[in-house]
Length: 217
Image (cartoon, rainbow, N blue to C red; front, side, top):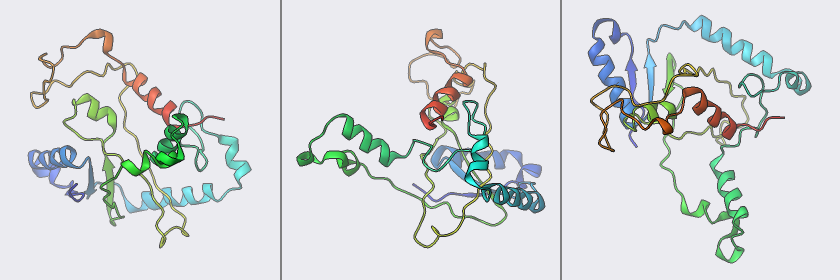
């Protein structure tokens, strides 16, 4: 996997086509890109981080008064998200009763490897990654790349804060391929032609992903 590109978004003001091509290239190849000169002030960003620090410094009992709900609103504790690939592989191995002589709970983990790329903080930039709905919408043209937060030995003792913004379609929007000739047509249909029995909405897709991600208490 190539390195994550940095795109100067101020280019959009004077050369929209070139800026769009750079974003498209990054979205097709990496699924991640940084935006510089994005128009969000440092003052606003610093204020948001300050509020995050104040909230997460509260006692756990106070934070649990606002537990995450099925609408994806609220506080989630460490390990409440269940998409950790290591845990998933172990769970599959246990469920399938793989014997220790054959590798036991490490059977799946020993057969997977990942080409990880670091996404360090770049001052003045925001990091954008594509979600799997957009990959679905574009029939795989744009990439939703697997990503994980990891704690390195040199940073694990420090608090970590992030400001995440998720852009999603309205709930009742059908998830059908977008009308673009750039999309690969794998089944012989024209763009926009679909088996209506297989069409889901953006809301159904999101609900499925949330239910796969969180344990609700």
